[in-house]
Length: 399
Image (tube, one colour):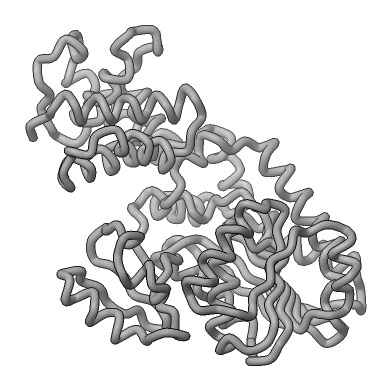
């Protein structure tokens, strides 16, 4: 492989932005790519994919290099280390001077005998995963979380159908395939910027992981219902709920972040959805909506350990303290938001975590604290080894 200074510099700049300034990888990559409009698809892919993969394997790379971050060329040496670990030869640049290929590869092979280095995660995360899932299952799922995520689309059935979109994409040389048991999903064979495609801008499709697409069907929706999505964010699930309800009924999409709700309003307009109303969530709004919802979706803040494929930088942002804080928030949301559900209505609790402490145990605690008021109908956990994001859903009836 031939390396070019401009693209290598771009990768280094991205990594510095991520690890020195704390930027999320996707935002850092996007900012760097905007700097040079002359980069073609190959260069842009190299910068994005190399940056993402280095973020994903950051600990293994650093431990294999075995140098303190004191050198002015440290990030370049990390880049070179990653290339050597992938079997590529590096050019004789000043920035790469002094690297010992044999020593680096031997060190990496030694490290790979230990799971926390092999899978490139912090010590505390490895201990937590083992404690909650057991050694065997954690080892299996962790390996899956270090694979590249598939690019999954959701077709907006208010405007079209899956086969029609698949054929339209095929005409543009964008190959995709359907997914059994996911009626609205298409998998793109190659990574592609769908945001510029007509099919996206006219609201025929959204980008939404297959596991996330399980939530709306799990809710047992019917047209005409009143649904509250109380942790809606930018509204991917609200949009799917509206499509399943055939744009008939009422959806109240709530969040603490006004900018996310503004984005949801744009997405709803693009999708041709008229039944979504957005509201900032606060005690007054909760009180006004008491006993009104047929369905209440609580897609609560969580560790996100089920989505590390797509968000590898979370490995380095998370901490045991931040997960404990998320658990407290989950508990508080269950305590304070469930009054909006009418008697006989159904609460759907969801996370993109694979930790029982955020999932089954959180629901057990809620049910124990509200004996005879709520009953579990069913729950479902989706593991990364099933091919998509790790996810958890519980369906709970209010008596």
